[in-house]
Image (cartoon, rainbow, N blue to C red; front, side, top):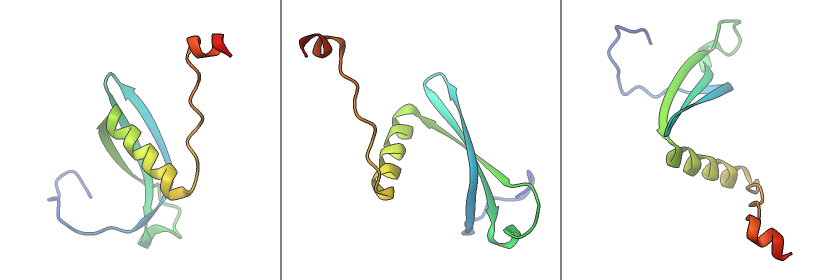
Length: 86
């Protein structure tokens, strides 16, 4: 989509090929790099979708992705008092 085209409700299918994130104070900007189905075989540059979300939304999304992927979240670090009592 170009900058002057109206946004429609079209459904797009593609493949995720990369991502980056940037902390912006209390928010996180995630840049998803994708290829649409029509451009999978070409050597075009990927599309970029930038999503601004709160840190809370980012944590919920991360936990959801861990769950659906069958992975376990990293173990919680012990607080300093608990580590003294061990």
